[in-house]
Image (cartoon, rainbow, N blue to C red; front, top):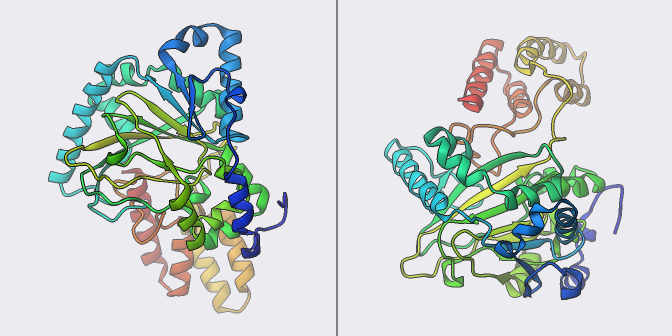
Length: 388
């Protein structure tokens, strides 16, 4: 598998993928796990509270988790992760109230991978819970097991985000995918990143889910393909039909109990399952936790730069003094080329996996030859959506 250069379609070798994901996790590899279920190590957190409280043993446990997430199965379950089930239930009630209020206000409904309206989704459930009831927030997120697994993968200073997903009976399954960062880009965009950036994407984020109700398999808990995070060109392969078919034939689902937590490498092939139950409202709080290192060194007012730069580039292009490649380079130096972080309530991923970037707006305005005043208005409106 290549370390540098770029992944091509020919790198998406299904036989190699099958061999990689066909291995078996030896329980001896995860000595602190209570059991291994279908290649997924399950940790009994009530029994490990003492381990978390003892620094040397805590470090050993975190080292085991890091190995599992990176070099081994890529996924683990923390059984009984939430010791305070009262906080989980209180948060559930608050989230249900937020869902009702947002639906009444005509908001919500847009999702990355599900048809609009198929699920109930709360964007930024982290902030909304904190503002609604800071005491419940403190009890809910004051969770040492969750903190330890986040630090095991990302180190200290990680940045927590969360989104509630509620799937009603009859809710359809997702297709196999990978997660943030490159998993939230189109296949064409992902292919533009060099191979080593694909590896980097996987270590910049940790994906998790806290179960807010009991989730038997018929309710559609997350489908997982252990070891698939180790497939280098997976951000391209996960969009190919033969890989999605393989995933459906070989993925595993583990039932979860209320208060359990599931964590996995964001490069793991996974998908929410179909809710085939008669009456289970499957609610999970999805945690996407980012490395502290995912930040620029300086604070730059790119909106101000774009306002000044647009008429200059427009005039230079009209005079034949700036070609397409030079235009693209100038935009890349000035405009924000990434859609995140944003306010997904007001800046949803309409028509794709991510909202339009500032750089994409700049390019569109040039392509359609907008006058500067129109571009400035669109730029301001975009900025307002992102921070609303």
